[in-house]
Image: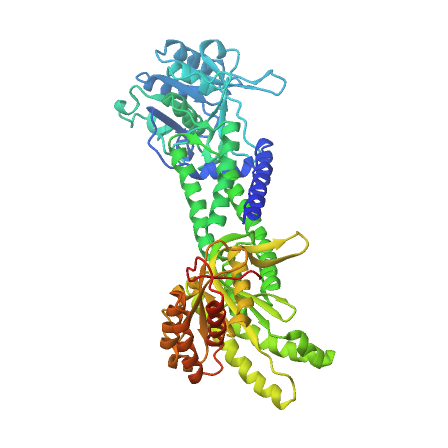
Length: 627
């Protein structure tokens, strides 16, 4: 898990760096701007701006373009209640009617109480390419109207030195000198009040409509070809200027996040993708949450846009998507490797259904080792050396494989893990890799089944003239460390700890007590709730290497033990009290009922020894000097 997280973090940092480079070099700015275009919504203009449109109806009624300048004299005279008049028309040539037409026009400009602005265009070399005639120019204010579109042909920004800048000074707005200002478009065509030129000059417009307004006169007729591309589609050039003027007049400009802030946002979004993938388990959930994350990023950018704050939403969305795809691919590869590892590591230890559960939930296994309360089993064949001497190598191998297969199947069927085979010995455990709250019971059930199954095997082997096998089983429950132990190139999923050693000691004591299975007190405590299991308290001992005495029990596979269990406990208590003579007599009576009871025979021999040579400082604990 740790390696997975570290690698995932490295991957998202690399993705963030990649997108950061793309952002720094403006690789996808055109697409980013197209997204920003979609964020504009129709708004009511802030300033009092009125457009006088040279439209098709006006041309049809007033005659072919260009018109006599006398018509504009009438317009100026009717707009004397306005604040400023701006012409988005090039008066760069003398009137086709004659000098008198120009003279009347300039005279109207001179006597106008309202400032009049006319356009100037500058070529790439910085020289004036289009401007009003020498006859008109001294009588008006001038403003540069060069416009510069983005690479996709859309006008989004205004720059210093434009007509709109001049208008901003007249409007007492903020100067854009030396700045690049994003135009806050108010809406599609005719968002601003638009009056046909013919209606103005023929007096159909009430004076209150234009009173105190900032008036722009320009072409809107399609045949005059004065149109530009904007976020709201095609707009007449005069309406573009109206949006620019309104933006400046509002004094509220868009602010874009700095490069540093944008790069931090990119890294944060990559981190969000990382959390979405790592914290969620199922692909469907990951997809749903990731889709929500993308929507939230988009909505956040939309909300910020409404507050005139622009974040690089395209780069953020791209970061999230790339991070998501990279992490999902990595997860797939990593999980495939992890599944293969789990399948290969446990195929000989666990049943297929348990392996599948681990594959579905790999977090249930600690591959590096963890402390758990578990039950450990050791079993061993009694007198295996003698048995092996009676059989050929082929016969011994066949017999041993048959035995180990049967024992292994029992362990695995009861949810246990076969840790290893040590010659003829078997080591197994319960409680890992899957958590099992009844591991002691399952281990005991397995032990009983192992003893009963071995009895049936012995019957079959007897028919085949093969030797009988007897086994000893030791069970202990306690806290151990479980996980993959070994080197990087070779390791084994196993358990380690002092409690493991005790299980091995108990297996070794089964021969001494003449029983098939010995369990510790902790096993008995956790498993006694299962009424199908039979236990007999055998002894309190101090095994080699231990400082504290341990109470041990026999796990009995034969229900006939019930006939002697009460008498056995009575005799054992007399033994503990140091009344070895009385205990001896009761044990001998038990032997009359069950002649082959190993513990009874052991206690008879021990009582006889103690009667001849009583131990000093007797506390009822028998100490084993050897393993």
